[in-house]
Each structure stands twice: as C-alpha cells, then as structure tokens.
Amino acid sequence: MLSPMFRLRHKSALLRHELAYVLGQMQNNVALPTLIERLSDLEEHIMVRHEAAEAMGAIDDHSAKPTLERFLSDVNIEVAESCEVALDLLNWCRTAEWEDTSW
Picture: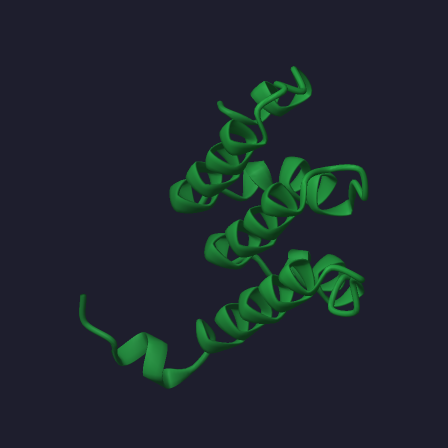
C-alpha cells in the first residue's frame, strides 16, 4: 500500500499531496490512520494537510468525523475548509440523494 511511503518523509510536499489524493481515490479505510496522521501534523505542508482531509471524506468512513471536526477551526483556512468539504461529503453519502445517484 502507499501509506508507508509517507513514513519516508519525502522532501517533496507535492509528492506527499499526491499520495494523499491517491489514498482517497482508492477509498480504502486502511489508509485512514495515515491520513489522520498527516492532517494532525501541524508541521506538515498545508497542501498535504488539505489533501489528507479531502481524502478522508472520499473514503466515506464516519470514524474520520471527530478528526475532521477537530480541524474545522484550523488556523490555516485551506485546511479548515477542506475539513468542511470532507464532512459535507461524508454526510451527503448517507442521504437518499446519494443512493439514487447513477454514475
């Protein structure tokens, strides 16, 4: 899995951002601990934290809600708004509208 690549702490924030994006697109909740770790790391680049939040929403696992809610008031607006988007997605995925959507 891609999650261990974060532990390498690659110097490229863009690569770490892309890893978070791919983890979200894979929609595998096994990635949640890694994404929570990236979002919670205040030393992490804002771009990576933002993408970790959005990826958590894409995975659609409500166990991520407490972490996303904790960072709704993050000092970095990009992170806070990404958490808001992720929470909106988590909530929308539980609606009849979501269930009736045909892709």
